[in-house]
Image (cartoon, rainbow, N blue to C red):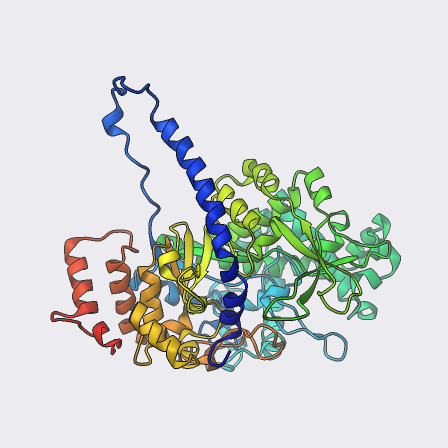
Length: 601
């Protein structure tokens, strides 16, 4: 389809096609639910006086409407090759507050997939993480280590890598300094200052459950003779977690294990400080949790009964998705699948631990590939493609009901994109989780496309595009004339102003949250794209610019604040701020700047 992205084409031929049946099912379900609600509120018999408090029985208030920005911390400015949790992250939070944004959404904070030259290919993706609980220690701020007295200013490297992230260079340059800071932490007197905080962190039972096996896994994995080997190819005593073998490793590699824990503590310390800083300024952090974990990880090695493994401990079944308009062979992701019956037997304790950790680091979390909780695509290990796989029923509502005592009313967003069957919708609605709509997917097909704003629903997050899509400006420029004409007629997106036109359309959606990429705020083209699915190399490297860049973005902050005010996505609106915002958007006369489809800085 010329001029249309592959993602849009996919929605033209899959999700959109099934909408009429879904609407019929939802209508029937809606009528039943409506009848139940009417009977519940109409408690007295027909013709009888109503209860005394009848006049005070109002419908529940709708959820707050919010807006925010997606930007992974590695994309922040900074002098040392990669964005981190330090001064520029706090400057970004200050900018979000000025823009009246209430959400900062990030990608997974886990250690990214790391290549071993000549041994194993990997591409630093946060979605192929090496551990589901640990943090990406490349995000540790060297400046804040100086502030905490763990490094000296003269030990810091010269500024480098300000335009894009070269992860290999960052690891080679920054990790020795982070290790030095961790060694100085460990040399402090026990129970005092930061060392006391570290001791308390390591003593927490919930932390020990994931940190101890992760540290031992790393100690074995970095043994020179085993570098590059998957854990199922380790000597059998390590592979099968023989207690005496593990005790020997803990004794012989005690310094390495302690250093690993100290580095993880430094990540935790800095990130929790940043979270507190954001929360104090009215900004909520939304994390991202891939449903599956990497096969070569402490998660699988330490919990082998919870995954589908063969007698040789290699994964016996792998995750993926079936063939569709986007891929005739489907997609074979390669992650081991969960042994759901064992998870059920253990009352989903591992999931409770994982979600609690994620929700400690964030205020809310998006679960990637939520549809797999309803049914997932299973591919036999060794299959060349995902084409031969089959659908298998997932844990469904039972899992979330049994997690409720541990998690309470956890704020979870369900990533429900792609071909979504009725059971996925039913599960998401039963859980009460908001789903997702993406404006870039809206313009294929007819008016029933679920991503068109008039089909949006309140309990959802609206995105012009995500980290996996083109930037909105790049996407707009690639559309054919018919699509551009429709964008102009429907949403006023015209004259090349794809990014801000899409932001405005998202802000106006009924969705209770609207979130857009920082690239769209800057109206950047596809040169700033974060990730191109199906392309292994060259992703995740985008950076916003030089340190101090947020001080130059007052105009963008003011524009966002005006839009958020007009569309009721701010915490408090008064008459004066609403009037000023309307003038900023529409001008004092007819049409205003947005009437031309352009908003000049």
